[in-house]
Image 1: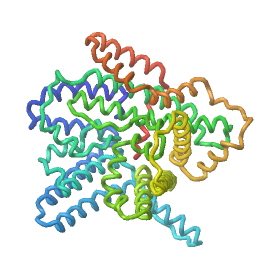
Image 2: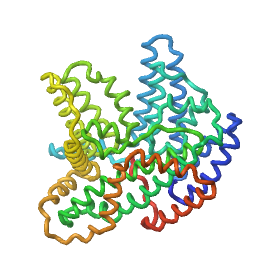
Image 3: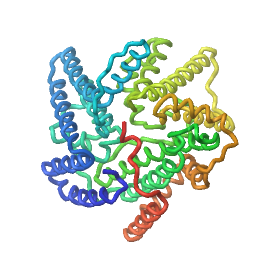
Image 4: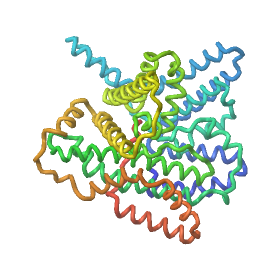
Length: 475
């Protein structure tokens, strides 16, 4: 069930008032919200509701066992079982065929004709997101950051439909305490919620889907058939598309959760304004960045054991982060590219500190040069991220330089405008955005309703026919 559709609008129109009516009775509200979330998830494929329920039950049981363990070694053993169970499910559905195909290709290169089985496995939507949230729960119980909660509360946390299939990755310590409070519907920030939903819809339906259908998909499908200009524009268009698609989903998810009385953490903060790769990862998919830092990079040792160990930990974290996004070597290459850049930046900072050079505030001109360098580096990485194979990626890189002079019918005014809007919206001053939200929130209910209706009509008129699935549904 996609957010910007009539089906979801009807679903949410039923769930929202019932949720507030039942909220004073938690024993009724919790099963209602779980049931609504399972309907939302099962709308795509009812079979995988059982998987979601199994992950929920598994982690709740092991969370309690970890908490009750009397020694640290027993807690570690129980956590290991819980993590192995979660990663086994994720590994089977997401990586089994990738592993078998990789082994088969390796054997063929060694002239060993061993027919590997091909499994017909459908990837459950959102499995990476709800698995990571379940992992954060059991790990934080082991770390004594959170305590076990009743099953129904934990089930609400895992299945809560606004973040279920594409995040943000909300940790147990951020979500569960909110279930103890009883929010007042009169204190819900309607202006902020509707502003986020409409802005997210615009980014997704008007900008992301337009760029996908008009230039990104055709060029990446057959880069050798397109001009260098089209490939350059398609590369920047994909940077705008993936940002608008994912941040648009996040905006809608945060807004919908707000209407239900739940607050989510921020997930994007102008990532294309970054002046370093490290800065980019502090702004892009922030909840995943923090998850990888706290549950992978720091446990590996972080930067506590010398330069080489730090580089190793950075590379491993980014390689695993790349593989988390998809079962393909192009995702691994994308992660490795960012890992290498983070190592290089860390090396430069160490050299500066070793020389005793103080950190200085860069000039405005230098800031823009750094932004330009980082943005183009990120776009080069997106080529690997978007390409289904390395041959497609190499064809894209070659086409950037060797196909000038060909006709470029896909480079239209609407495409260029969408690219500029998708990237440029990150440079809108924050004070201006806050002022717009405050102004919208102060409108009367009638004026707010009319504004929302007009915005939806305009989005529907400006966007292409139909709504494409969100990119991160595949992760």
